[in-house]
Length: 351
Image (cartoon, rainbow, N blue to C red; front, side, top):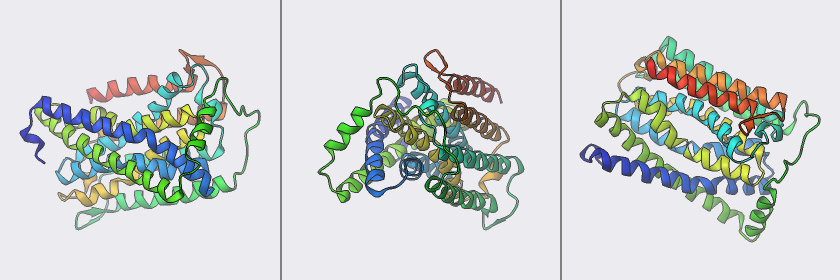
C-alpha cells in the first residue's frame, strides 16, 4: 500500500478512517477485559495493565514497526515517549468529562496502582537515559538498551501481579462509590454477557484487538506520509498527530471503564499501556536496520521522557492525597497534569 501516491486530503481521510476503527473497537475492549478479569480471578489493576494495556498498545506497535522499518527512527521514538505523556493527560480529560466534579483519583485508591506508576517512572527514566547517552553496545545493529528495557518491563509486570495479590497496605477512608456513579451500567453489562461462554468472550476480545491493530497501521502509515507531504518534522507529527490517534484506544477504553465504574481498571489501563510502550523499543530496534535506534534519536526526544515522568508523578500524587477538591470540574491533580502537558508540548515544539 503506497500512501505516497495519495494526496494530502486522501491521506487525511485514511488517517480518519483508521482512527475511527481504533475508537470503535477500543470501546469494546474494556468491557471484555472486565468480564475476563471477573471470570478468571485476575486482579483489576493487573488485568487492566496487562490485557487492556496490551490490546490498546497495538496501534503503537503498528506505528513503531512501520516507522522503524521505513527508517523513521525519530517518528518511532517520539510516538512512544509522546504517547506516554498524552495518555496520562487522557486520565485528566476522563476526570473532567466523565466523573463531573468528582476526582478520578478519589475513587481509585488501590496501592497496586502506585506500584504500577513507580515501575513506569523507572522504565521512562531508563528510556530517557538511553536517548541521552546513545547506544552503549550493539551487535549486528541490536543494542543493549532495548533489551534492558524489555527485560525491565517483564520484571515490572511480575512485581505488579505479585503485589496486587498481596498488598502491603490499604487506604483508609475509601469512598467506594461516587455520587450518581454508573456502576449500574456495569451490572447491566454483566447481565447482558451472562450467557456468553468464556471462549466466545476471548474470541471477541481478540477480534476487537485485531481491528485496533489494523486501524493503528492505517494511522501510522498515513501519519508518516502526511509529515512528508506537509513538510512538518517527524518529531512534531510523532509527538502530536500520530500519538493522538494511537491514543484513541486508551481514550475509548478508559472512558468506557470509567463510565461503568471500573475506576482502578481505567487507571491501570493507562499505566500498563505506557509501560508496554517503553518495551516496544525492542521491536523498534529489530525493525530498524540502519543501526541502533537510540543512536538515531535527537536529544529533544528525551524531553518527552522527562515530561512523561513529571505527569506520572502528578497523577501518583493525586492517588496518595485522594482529595475531593476540584478545579473546572476536575481534580487538582488532573488540572495540573493537563496544564503541564500543554506547557510541555509548547516547549517541545520550539526544540
